[in-house]
Length: 177
Image (cartoon, rainbow, N blue to C red):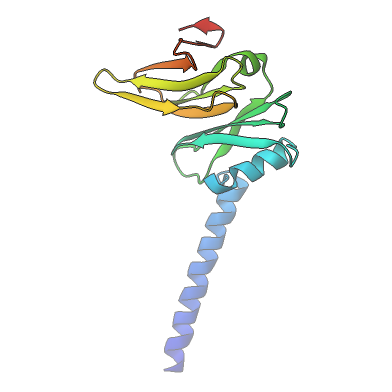
C-alpha cells in the first residue's frame, strides 16, 4: 500500500513539474499577458498614470481600448491592447501615448490581423451616441457627451456613425463622415 502512495506522489510531482515548466516557457516567450481585470492597473503602472486620473475603456475578446485623463481633461493618454491568437494568455500592450487626433477627433485604431477596431476620443466634438448599421438592424450605443470615451467595435459591424448632442454627424479621424 505504501508503494502505491509513493508512485502516486511521484506522478503528481511529475505533473506539477511539467506544468511549472510549461508556465515558465510561456512566461519566457512573453506569452502571458494581462487579464481583462488587470488592464487598468497595467495602464497606470506602465504609462505612469496618476491616481487622480480617470481610466475608462472597452474590452472585447480580442482587443481593448482605453483613454486616461485628469479631471479637468487638460491632457490624455490612450492604450490599445490585443489578445494574441495561438498559445498565449491575456492582453498585450500594442500601442499608446498622446496624439492630437485623439484630442481633437475620434481616432480609429486598427491592428493588423485583428477584425476589431478601437475608437478613442477626448470627445471635443461632444459625441452623444454611435449607431452601427449592419444593413438589417441599427444598434445604438449611448455616449456621455461630456466625457472622453474608448469603444472597441467589430471591424465588420457595418456602417458606424457618431452623432453629437444635436443629432448632427461628427468628425472622426479629421474627416466628416
